[in-house]
Image (cartoon, rainbow, N blue to C red; front, side, top):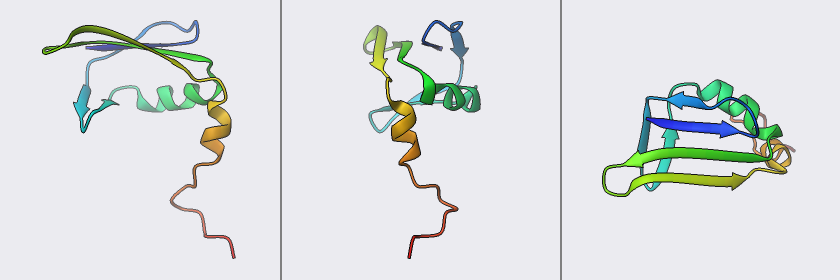
Length: 80
């Protein structure tokens, strides 16, 4: 079980999380997570790893909206 909280929003529980290739992938609630993240200022993620125990990560997400705007979408045509 993974839990996350963006800013002072309610804690969200995510039962379908996986750790692959040294990264954490959230499965359930991905659209809500990605909609809220760009305008946030702090992200807390809490999970329990069998080999590492209880872990709480905090990320400063201030300015994420500017970073998201720089990501090229796959359906955009390249600039000429």
